[in-house]
Image (cartoon, rainbow, N blue to C red; front, side, top):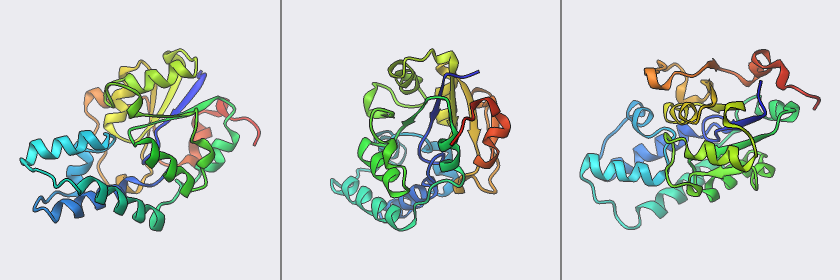
Length: 222
């Protein structure tokens, strides 16, 4: 069915979204802006840092201090060093995956590479790691997924995208790819899965332990 599997990173390969969300909530509270996890999930999940910051400036009429970005990024990496974990079952799935795969993430190249290294997936950083800095438009535009498919020399219709966010699902669908939603991240636990008509995946799964139950043809030998 598929010639390429494209994994999102945050909230799919690594359980990072809950850490990022709470850090953003805490840092904005110091500036008098009070949001919650539901707001973050609805407006920011799956989007790049510049897009998130621009939305905050516009929606809250907030001028962020010049040092905000550097401080936020530094504190977030400290939190990752302390709390970041690989998503359960991911290492086993990647070890058995016989179909070529890559990563397409809204994270910056540095953050993505460091995050993957922290959980033992540092070998995935390199030519198979595609970030939003490589394209003009980030998710939910299809540009990043189409860029990854082009560089991996794969027809978009033969690509399977694994995403957790509505933003990422929209991007994958817009690229003409098959999209499965992974719902097992801490940020989605015990939360209603709101899926508007334009962000409905072709399939869903909550654990990578079940990945090959859905797609046995993708499994090779470890």
